Amino acid sequence: MRRLLGYFLRGLVLLAPLAVTVWVCWLIFTNVDGWLGLPVPGAGFVATLVLITTVGFLGSNLLTRSAVNLLEELMSRLPFVRLLYGSTKDLLNAFVGEKRRFDKPVSVALQPDGSVRLVGFVTQESLPQLGMAGYVAVYCPHSYAFSGQLHVVLATRVQALDVASADAMAFVVSGGVSAPAAALPSTGDRATVETP
Image 1 (tube, rainbow, N blue to C red):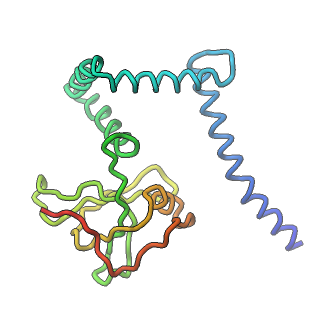
Image 2: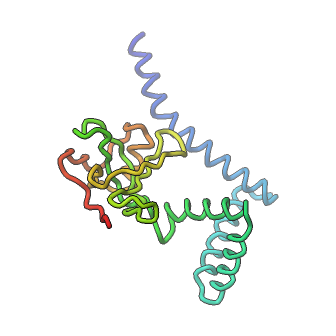
Image 3: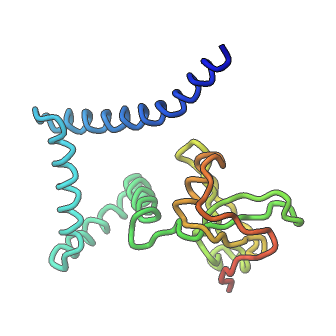
C-alpha cells in the first residue's frame, strides 16, 4: 500500500506542473481569442503577439518616437492615470525593458553576524535623494506570489550573489525549492555596491 501511495505522489509531482502550465496557457489563448472574437482557436493570441511586436517596432522608430513621448507626457499629467501608467511601465521596464532592475541578485544580512539573510535584487545603488548615504534599495520578492517588499539597507550588509538573475528569482519565488545553477557564496564576502 505504501508503494502505491509513493507512485501516486510521484505521478502527482510529475503531472501537476504540466497540468497547471497547460491550463494557464489554455486560459490565455481562450481569453484573448474571446476578447477579439476570432473563430479560429489561437488566432487572437497570434494577432495580439503581432500587434505588440508592431507597436514595439513603431515605438523604436525615430518617426514615431515623438508621438510616443507626447503620449507619455499626456499620461504623466493625469492624476490617477499617472500613478497606474507610471507604475506599470516601471514594473515592465524592470523585468524586460532597456533599464532592467532585477539584474543584481544579492543577499542581505538581517543580523550583524549574518546568520539570517534575505535574497533579493539591488534596484537603487545609492539613495542621496532620500538623504540616505551608504544605503541601497533591495527588492525581495515573496515566495509563491506576485508581490515583494522593498528594503533599504546599509550597503555593507549586502552581498552580491554569483548566480544568474533568473536563477535567483526562481530560487526566491519557489520558496527555496528551485536550486540556483551555481551555489550561493559564503557569508564572508560583501557586495561591490557603489555608494556616494
